[in-house]
Every structure is written in structure tokens, then in C-alpha cells.
Image (cartoon, helix red, strand yellow):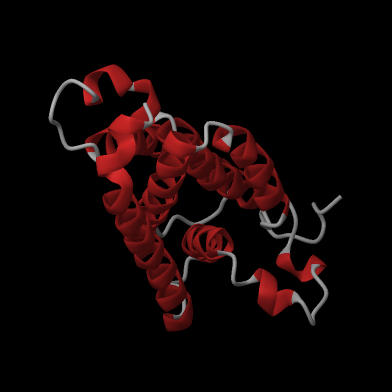
Length: 202
């Protein structure tokens, strides 16, 4: 449907899929990190942050591996490779995903239905993000609202450096940085505030 409207559509599609797949995997695995380790947390004094962080780190490793097929696809389709800012994009993506993970892990301790709520949220979030369609499909008057989506900013960050071969604009870098660090701070504040109460709800 969108093949003729998007340049290098295979790379465009796969880049969006692997970024959002990492995000959803990170949050889905991390939100159960506290609950699944309840027996250890209730018996041993151990930093609780290590559990969601380790899940996020394992998802990051999977994401780095998934970049190899993307690189191969770029070579096969003749897309020029310019990954100079790729480490920065990965770091910002990881920080944002970790922040959301900390929030959801905290909620999941007190409300065990959080995982089912997240499945609905992640599905809606997927369709609200231009993974398989261009952002021009949105009405022009509403486009600015959709651009507030942090995952849109991060995915477009990757697409600019792997498809267009150009660095993102300062505005894009600022939006990605603010979204990543802002979400991480929110996650840390919420997690730290309630972590001492975890043992009473596990």
C-alpha cells in the first residue's frame, strides 16, 4: 500500500519494527522483573533496581543483534550506510525504554492487571507510530500532536541516519534527549518512591 510513497521502503519498515520491538520487549519483560523475583526480594536486601535494569539490558543485546539484518538489508538495497550517530540513538532509546519499564514495573507490583493494560497500550502506541506508513498520512492539523510521540522521534532519528545518511536536526536531537532523560527521571522517581513498599505487596 505504501511502497510507492516511501523511498527505500524495506529499510524504512524494518528500522521501525526493530526499534518498536525492542521497546515493547523491554517493557514487557521488565514489568514482571520485581514480581518474578519476589522470593529473593523478600528475603535478601538487594538493590531492586537491578532486576528491571537487567531485563532491559538483555533486550538491548537482542536489539543490537537485530541491527545486523538491517545492515545486510541496507547493503542489498543500496542504501548508504552512515551510522556515525547510531550509538547516541541507541543510548537515548535505551534510556527512554528503561524509564517506561521502571514505571510499569512499579505499577505491576500494586496492580497485577498492569500487564494486560500494557498489551492494549502498546498496541495502540504501535498504530500511532509511523512504523509501516509515512507520517504524512496524518492530517496536517494534527501532525504536530503525533510528533510529540517519543517513539516517533527515536524511530525517525534512526531513519535519518540510516536512510538519508544525514544527522538529525538540533530540534530532533533535543526532542529525543528530552524525551529519553525526562522519562528516565520519571521512572526513577516513581520506582525509588515506592520500592520500600514492594515487600508488602509481593
